[in-house]
Length: 442
Image (cartoon, rainbow, N blue to C red; front, side, top):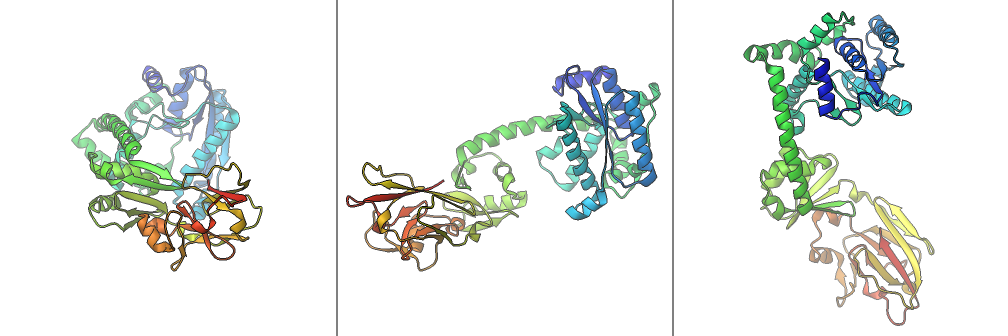
């Protein structure tokens, strides 16, 4: 086993066997006791971390004392933490298991950073990976859930991942190692235990080498995921761009991709859209503009030639005033910078996110607000006044971005700039202009 673990550490570049000090998570159970002993025999500099979750009374106290003695036996620095797990679970509205997981990994990382350790080693093994893979499949998962537990994720490493459970037990017996039993590992309350006790035995009757088979499958899925990741990355480079916290995806590019729904789901994963919703979005590619789709955090609108993704709270923008001499305004995702210039030798900006206004024609305080029905202005480059609603249609502003259009209004009520789109002709810089207020959306 030592040679197998050593080779796995090298092949996956988990850490340096001699140069790095590793924080080993030790519960006192079979797996973590083997991990500690194996790494010790490989000559890895070690420290031991133990979590007391306050869930099993005297048994948990005995576990902590056992691990403390174990660390002393291996002459390793010892760290222990006592958590109020149930209280934390209630506060966060999560299960006790999820709470324990969140608490322990957060604390492990705190210790690692404070003490300067290279990484955190956990005792996950081949059977754990198989169980995780099947649980994910039961709940519904993408490719990431089908490659089980990775050998390395961030600063967490899993040196025992290629070892099956019988080999771990044989190692315990051969080396006369002592461990603690955790009764909760047999409790049918937990889904993983039900899978372990009721489902996996049946599957192993069908395939005695199930754990190894699933490990090989996970490796193949992991390779496929990397291919998909690169394909999605290339698609994003061609189809996606973000501007002012709004993301745009070109429909024509998406249509040309293989497995369009799968690729789009990966692109939309950061915005919280489920795969079923993504399938509806793809089905709407040929529909009329204006179809809306919501995730818990974002709204997607199918526009004419693109998908437009915004945060769902963009419409919560209020009215803000800008006093004379004020240089910046930051509110609800909008950041304006205002600079007063002498008109002489001032170069007019060409970018849409900048406006040059005749400062002497402006009345302070200025007002920044959302546009409203009935608003009108006199766009530079057009004769006469125009309803802002018609102007937005002409500019082909997607439905979910119309709610986020803001206007800069002079103190006399005249719109001076439809921010990011067009200034008003009445405030344009002319030969008679003495002072210019340059306003830029950052």
